Each structure stands twice: as structure tokens, then as C-alpha cells.
Amino acid sequence: MGKITGLLMFILAIASIWLFVGQNRWWFPEGISEYAPMIDKQFMWTLFVVAIAFTAAQFALGYAVMRFGRKGDARAAYTHGSNKLEVTWTIITAAVFITLAILGQQVWAKLHLTAAASDAARIEVVAQQFQWNFHYSGADGIFGKTEARYIDDSGLNFVGLDPNDPAGKDDAQLTTLVVPKDRAVELTLKSKDVIHSFFVPALRFKQDTLPGMAIKVHFTANKEGKYEIPCAELCGSLHHNMKSNMIVIPSDEFDRLMAMSEEKFKEQLGELVGRYQYQERQ
Image (cartoon, rainbow, N blue to C red; front, side):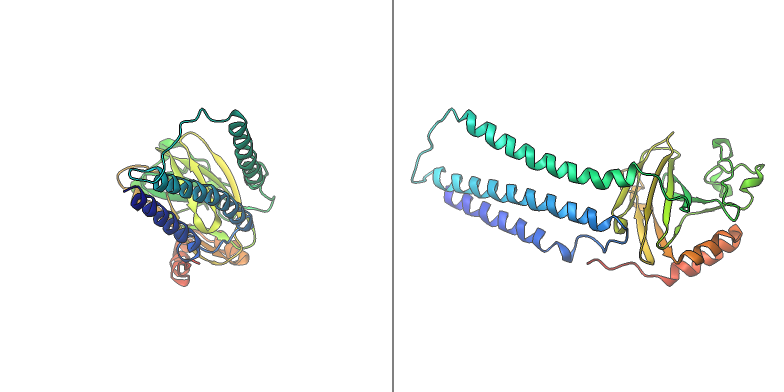
């Protein structure tokens, strides 16, 4: 029985390894942000280290079950262990994973501890159950004031734009994110109700949105196309329906859209959605 169990453990470990080795067939879409190659490299290094630890542990466990299991040909011996060995492998494990964490922090710091470029396209994102809302400043580049008392979903004022503020007259509220290619984009993430998570797999970017907070993040998309934005945080009974699209277009075309009225912007949006197809996975 012990040999059969040990053999099954070997088979399961090998099958698990095969699934991860074949990851390019089903895992990530092509990265389209400037930091995507760094994040992918960090991910693969972490996966490689964990794979070695997983494989060694599973094969050692399978060997122990085969040799010392019921009806095996040897008996296990009790031992108090070795303090030197325990200290050694603890230090090695700590050094490996602390090094991985430090390498990962380099990318994280560039994304979260540096300001967006001065010419970045600035867009406000307001999450709610179960919809993404994107607030554009319009031709004047100035966001109109928003207040919770003005929020009116039935009137399509999802972000609470103040109707008395002149700066908001040319603002636009849409449920699709449109950003320029090869130009920094700064998002200000907000939530009207619960915690949501803004996630664009192609950007390798994910950030929670929290009620009462305005979280600034930035990225640069370097490939035109249409990319899905799911909510990556369980936010209620219709969480599975909370998704939108990010459309990356040439920078000059983006500037023309920003100069349009909200009505014309929405008209052009339909053409943009139909122009691009979702990206195939690698």
C-alpha cells in the first residue's frame, strides 16, 4: 500500500510540474505595459524557486511513504533532529525568499512611490456595485467638483458631478476606459460602496479601491487594443458581472476625444469598441 501511495504522489507531482511548464498555453496574455517584462521576470523567478522547493518536498515525501509505509521493507527511526541542520535550512530559505521580496519591491516602488509624468492623461475611476465608472475632465483638462449628494444613477450622474460647477460642463462619464498609447496614464481610484479591485491582466496591474480613499496609480500602455477590466475582489452577489473594457488608442486620437462633448465621445466609443478584438492569450 505504501509503494502504491508513494507512486501516486510521484505521478501527481510530475503532472503538476507539467501543468506549470505548459503555462504559455493558458496563463498570461501578452504584456502591454512598460513594467510588464519586469513583473513577468519576477513572477518566473518566484515560480522557479517555489517549483524547486515543491518538487523536492513531494519527491522526498513520496520516497518516505514508499520506503517506510505499511508493508515497506524498512522501519523509520526516531530522531531528535539536528539544531545545526534546522538553522542551516532556515537561513537558506530566508535568504532566498527575502532576496525575491527585495527584487519584487523594485518594481512595486516604481509603480507606487513615483509620481506620474507631468503630461500624463488623468482619469478618475469610481467603482460601485457592480459597475466601473470613468470620469474624464474634457477639453479644459480640469475635473468638475464631485459630491456624494449629487450622485444619481438613474440620471447617469454616477460620480456625483456638481451641475453648478462650470469646470464640469465639458466632463464626461463613461463605463469604458479609453487611454492613449505610449503616454503615461494616471488613474485616481475611488469606491462608492465596498472594496473593489481594478485589474487589467495585460498591464500586469491590480489595485484595490477602498471607500473613502482616492488612490493614485499610473502606467503606460504600449500596444493598441481592447483589454478586459474585471473586478478582482469579491464585492457582492453580482461580482461576476462587474467588468469593463480598456481601449488603448493613438495619443493624438485620444486628444481629439477629450476635446469632444460627452455625447460625441459616447458616439465615437461605439466605433472604438467594435474596432478592436480581445487579445488572444500567449
